[in-house]
Length: 309
Image (cartoon, rainbow, N blue to C red; front, side, top):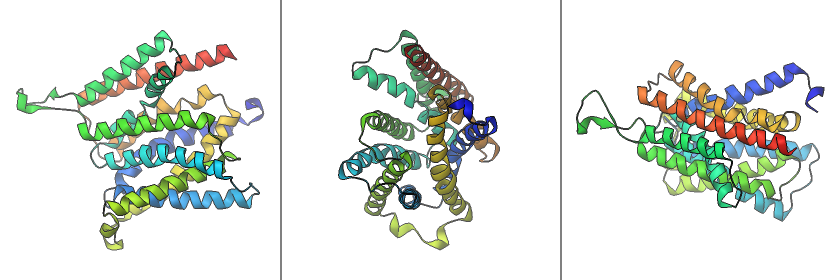
């Protein structure tokens, strides 16, 4: 029960999923500066997945069944291969802060996907989705720049990068929905490791097909990119995921779900403070609108679950 957990442990865990996961966007941005995006994702998930799989099996976890491997492969493909792969690729074209804002639209996609499955959304959830979509529109639609001419109208975010991130967010949503009923291995850490191994393997194949392997050489990888990759493996994948799964057991889902709209704020602040990113005025407006829509959807969903329980 949550009451049995020391307060300092809860605060520390929330600090990890807020700050660490929020900082991974800047780490990915730095990483892909000299490491090809799919190659970096493959190395990240293969190393983290192998370490976590070996650790959980050493701790006594049972050998996964064929059905568990199948379902973990599906989840890993949707979440890590497509979802995280999209983030890595788009980080070459989109600021880390705006990347996190567009990824934060996952709760909006979740409402739409559940509506497609027949689950009728609440009115305020629909309002939240519409607000979020307005924010996305403010990001991707051209806005007048300093030159008041048609030629001087540009979007606050690269349209291609935004489209790839939207696809990745949709894939992450579908994977999350599928994982609810998937036949996954126990404990959760073992299932996560299997998802990482699947996602990392597919990213490795894609990286090879895209010719990234031939572009990777120790002399071309900067120290910043290398340290970013190590940070993503250790903190982003191993510590971040483990903390998240622990929090799901000891804290309410509503409280844990707050990371969805706290991460973008952390990512934007770190991008500006450490990454030297400068966001146009419209991007700040759009970010506020999107995060507001996501928060509304998340809070309405949390209230629904509280009433149902």
